[in-house]
Length: 154
Image 1 (cartoon, rainbow, N blue to C red):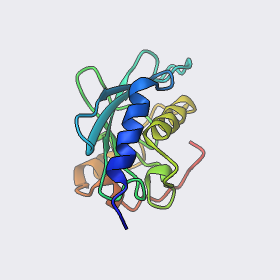
Image 2 (cartoon, helix red, strand yellow):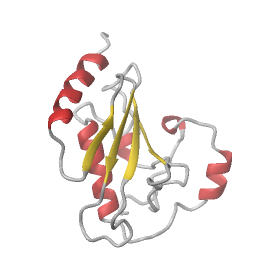
Image 3 (cartoon, rainbow, N blue to C red):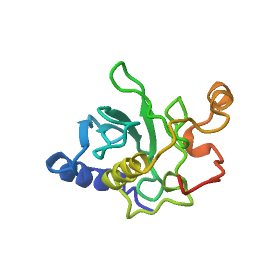
Image 4 (tube, rainbow, N blue to C red):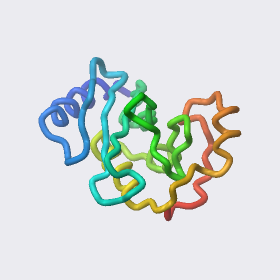
């Protein structure tokens, strides 16, 4: 199978360079392997009010057949959002980003919007259960972690 990634990513980049939904900003896309975007929650959710979060997208050779690796990045002015599905090291437990939940019709913009929506609807100012142990012990890339999606209502 041909490597669709570069062509697809070039198209996506052209599109998001020109227009992105409110609250999503392209920070940098210097190559077709790693992009950074900022997202904000636009509604009045007090957990995320006034905050901006940095997302890192890493694209493998199999994108868009396989999902990108998407994590939150901590910077001085970019915290890791509090959420029961987001670990304090920035790893996101979301079925959309796993092989099961991913579909090639998804793209960078739709992933950002899904994460925005996941934050918007959240009412729990807390980390996932077992966050400290997970963060201390995890040596796997996000896609290699066998998440058990225990609660998709969050």
